[in-house]
Image (cartoon, rainbow, N blue to C red; front, top):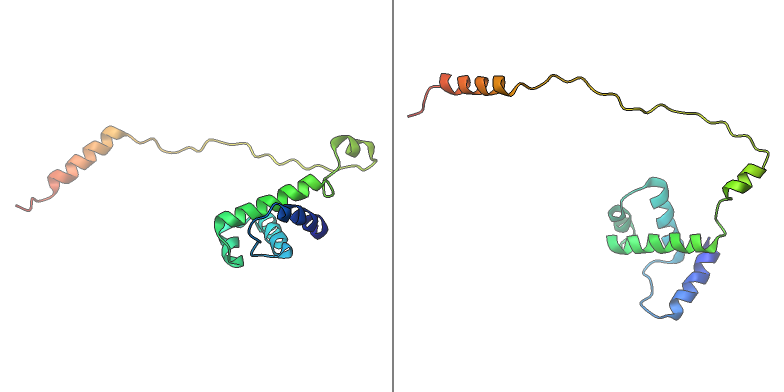
Length: 124
């Protein structure tokens, strides 16, 4: 991954611009932490000393660069069908069921509220 990112970084620096505050290894580690732990950009940025928006840009650049390289891509569906590997699948039923809750009777609620205000002594 580092080799792919360093070659992409060389191409990027040819265009000019400000050099990054973090080295390639730290940027890759930042991306892997985001993908593994799914922490917020804010928390990852605080850990590395960069802003939230810069963290987003770094992670997005790393992901896009690795995807474009096609070195780390997974085989397609047809390639998986040609292999003799058998897969075991487990299904989980996650259907929604309605919850029975008592219905709120608005008129009874208003009557209770009125009786409470009448039974209180006035302050005047």
